[in-house]
Length: 201
Image (cartoon, rainbow, N blue to C red):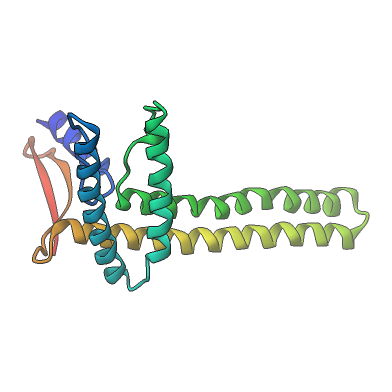
């Protein structure tokens, strides 16, 4: 029972990002596939509008970029490319990927900043020469670290908000109960096993 609960808990934590309407592109002919894709993207556009209203943002530029991306993927499929990069992608997944890519800049600045900071401190503390230069180098590194940390915090908060809104849209307009998690329980005194189930309202 304990092992089963651990497996269930791992499955809940690895839950995928909420998606919009899923594509149904398997068809017997090219014409049928075109019709199904047209219906699918019409549903995706409605999802994008709902997502924009929920976020309080105009997502028209993101939708235009999404259409360009899907056009490139369609051309790749027409050329016989069957990689994951050429598959039809939902707007929800596209936005999640886009927000996650924006985290990279903060991580890069944060990592790069330790180089000049360490070099400046090494020159200033070890060699004892060029104190002004060492201070300037360390200052640049410190500024990069702070900027990267701020960007990571801001972009991370935006990604969490996007995922919360997507999860709310996936629940439907009337749903208030949300699944939070499952964890195993063990009472060593009573020698009993069980599971705790968490929900949020």
